[in-house]
Image (cartoon, rainbow over all chains, first blue to last red; front, side, top):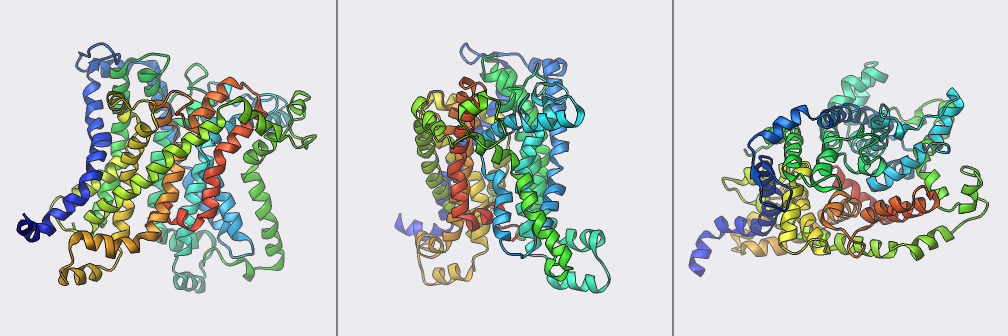
Length: 295
Length: 281
């Protein structure tokens, strides 16, 4: 035993170090993905035995109007959430100075990201509240008529996205602040001597150097947009009339709420969301793999 | 440095900048400040329509009310009970997985690594039904350890990514030298690598603490009663009962936000090191 161990130590050691982490990760993350895909071919209420129905769940999805709404909303989320990248960059540039007290300003600007999305949702519900919410009053002042953002089926999703952008911009800002901190000063000086400034400087000299930060910012923003659940749940419960549902929320509603226990149908929605996410995950992994020196 | 340091610009611009800073901050944090003020606004003010002026007095009783009439103290306790073991568990497991993936060359190394990375990004919903089932079958539904176990597993993905990259950046000669001396592999881990991991452990601890404290989705899926619900889920159900009692909702929100905010301010450097994944350093 001991001789065998001595001879093969370096071959066996990594697997012993990996075993506990890999086991629990497989049990709770990897295997459930395949289970969900499997469930999506069943009709199952979570109690009685599941019945195999082939692709019926997916066929139903294509004609389910709620699914269409959720899907479109997810698209809007994805597009508008991307605003966090330029806006975060803008604030980072604004704050990238060395005046006194700037460190405090940077941390206070970062504040929204540290707070739970549940709290962010409540804060913005108050901000939008009809009759006394600051935004409602502001709109009333300007146009003469207040808008109850979260009760308007056409506007509600935009209202929730704005709430989501608040912490997301803060996150992107911190990524860019770190990035700006590492921009090579000699290149900036050289460009300045050549007469570059403002937009041209930003576009041709700074942004290329910020590419790692931009990459991470885009990745976390895409994931944030597709994971949006907390805000929808807290601010509107998907309403009014289901108009602010997104895939993640609709899935939860179908599989596990007072609306029903259609686990198979819910799983099918989750698979669709997973497939969308996989497009981005694959891209991300592909880039990481390409950058890996020892592949 | 970009943009041009403000000290090199005209005096007027400098003044303008110093003025713009607090104004911008005020606008940026306006919703939060509003809620903070509402949390110390007496209920009578709100009934009288004083939503924005100074509160007529500092109503600490809102906070007292929240603690007296709701299980808020229990919720906060529950959050700590789930969060702390998760931090310890995920950091411990990922120290080992990160070490294995950073130090050893073996065929499926990158495959395992990317499995952790990819798993870390999947939507929660694809895990929901099976994980809930598993937790029910293990008899752990609505217990702190049922929730913590899932969190440990999921966070191990993110933490492995971080630890592996951190260990990869350590000087490999250290390990080679130890191997030449005939030091056993687990001793290399324990006596050589682990002592160098302090900054990474600190960064991940703060970060995982915040993630788990703020988790809402899994709290709703895996717990159901005030004895075990963490504060996010608790606040959500209280919000349902409080219907527009904004002074209470605000006080509850501030309480829920406080621990991660304190954590951030005390451990700021580590927090940011963790967030940027060391990738944009």
